[in-house]
Length: 319
Length: 218
Image 1: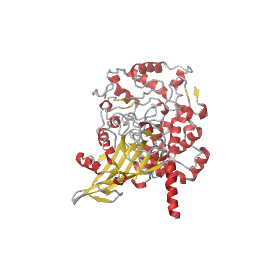
Image 2: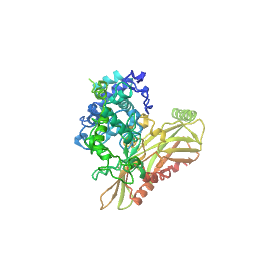
Image 3: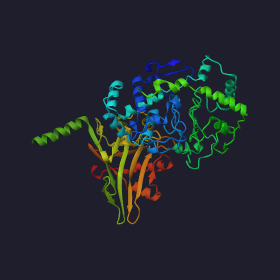
Image 4: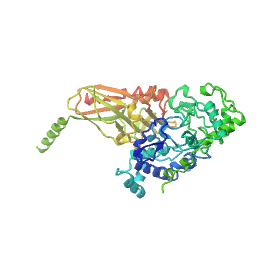
């Protein structure tokens, strides 16, 4: 394990992992703590009802379990499934369409979005600077005299960048501590043959966008990354998400249309896959899996669940 | 006598540090623009501006880049841009908008603070030029307009450069003539633009022509 000293061993990851895009050695424990307090506090929303954790629950891989799309303030619904927050330092872009290229700037979006927190940056800062709790936290965790956009955004980014999931059964297998069961091993081999081109080890993601053959939702009419780049090639493409902790991050896909992993596997084995011009070339070849293969694959996917991450008190509601 | 001495000292001190102020003055035709004040275009038509903001960056005098930070012009909270120069100059250049490095600098301080309303949350970066308001035509429903002109990624970069040649005084006043922008909106019926892309790139090309040295400065 690689320990990042400046973060007081808070952020560890296996030394065979690629270099993250965010320098984890620059994370500061105090800013992480301040960010954690902010992450769990509904003070960031207009009516103080919604916190970041409302849609990003630790126990479910920091996503919004059982909601195809999340609801924010006043029960307003968004248009996309809340993504899981884990290993964000290895992400080049954020959001399903990759519109956000800096983790530190991401929080402006939920704070100001009418269907999320519906507030203003000015309003948040005013509230934080008046709050006795946050005046105290400022003394404890920062050298700044007041809350500023920079402090707010960088603190939240530091906390979310510190959310590293690398202690699943898969990771233990890779570290030579355990061996897979026969079924898990079969599933692993099937995964490498059929899925890893997009969900590439060890992060089980790629910093790419793909059209995965989902028919477009006639209500949401989400055209994906095209809305950011306006390039035809990006039509109906969405960020390839990580499969780590996928056991608990349901429902799946950018619009949360699949409730079960089995439905996802069935989609890729052609039950609902649309062979349009936009379909990613890696999916042009049909994936053929028997019912037993599907069970084996599922068994492997469950090895990506990281219980230590899901229960790590350093990531939990601050007490 | 004391007043004369004060004025003399002010001029001398000002010249000693080579300080030039640059101020911006939105206009619509011959009319100065004030926020939320109706400007009559003709007997049936008028216009109201509710927001006028833009970034000015990459200042150059005599083709030499200065190290001024990005400057946000906001009609609601007007301020002057200060240029420090040890020599006189007859060429002034600036960018309308921000360069790509600034968009992703993660520096949220000063005029780049997201509380100033120019940060694009859903698409990392800043709006370069923002106006909003409404076109009023008698007998018709008001036509609101809202242009957020921005985008820094190829092929839809929208940052523009403006160069003005003149024998500048220590107080430079630039008009921002909004009439051509209004005519463009009416001609193309583009009254709402909130994202980067082809339309933003096309309309951004007009922006340099809006910035004109005030007649009294020439």
